[in-house]
Amino acid sequence: MKYYKVNFSIDVQEALLQDACDILSALAGEAGFETFEQTEKGITGYVQQTLFDQNILEQQISTFPLPDSRITFEVSEAEDKDWNKQWEQQGFEPIIVSDSIAIHDGRHLPAHDYPCVIEIDARQAFGTGTHETTRMMVSTLLDLDLKDRRVLDCGTGTGILSIAALKLGAAEAIGYDIDEWSVDNARHNAVINRVDDRFKSLLGDASILYKEVKGTFDVVMANINRNILLADMPAFCEKMKEGSLLLLSGFYTSDINMLEEKALQLSLHKKAQQHDGDWACLFFSKG
Image (cartoon, rainbow, N blue to C red; front, top):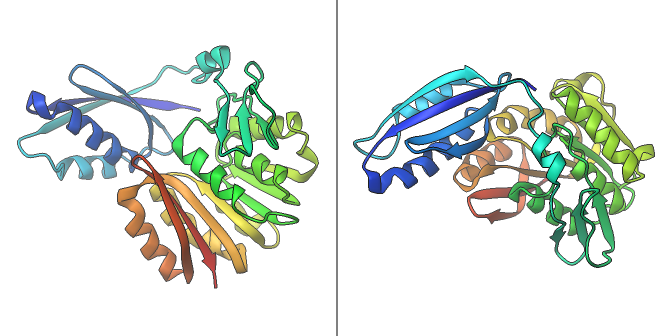
């Protein structure tokens, strides 16, 4: 993956700097940013080059809600390296979702037995269970009857959501991602979790749903940023039949109304929502 490194400098009263950094991080997420580091004068953000929308970023900055603040930024190409290399070396402690599922890497095993155990080996792909949105999506899957269901995983990353669905009884899962590393990593994780016979990982964006993906799905999942969700929801609906379910995350609580309005236009009915901090998860049905 090729990334831009964007250094933001925030000129604001010292007492408001932390609030300004938090707000800017949320707003920049709408321009495609995935992660941030706080600096002495602001934040540094990282964004995939193919997802960076500078027009949206400049618009968000021009309407920044804190008075008497000034934000400047500089864009440079980030060093081309394995962004998960340090994580791969260190791994992560097991993540327990409810009392039913444990997510771990190959170095750190759960202390106890769980009905469902998922091993994730992340290789330049996102989705280890450590993020709030992933945990909310997995916990939602736990509440569903997935037996013999067909599942579509949009923006599959490590494949964790597909693997969870398959281990919880789904008959088949198809995932896709725009990043070749993620596609390969999802296949790898399906193998080590012994569900590769029921999982297919494809390279591409939502347009492949019209070209390469056949039939409809009982459950469609997407843990992606708000703008991509809004653009791709019509394509998701094309792959849903009457009674199919749509699980969405990857966005903030402040984005909920916008996504609900889009869902209403597509004749989707809201069934539930949850949040973890500022992150949100929505659950819809078709028909």
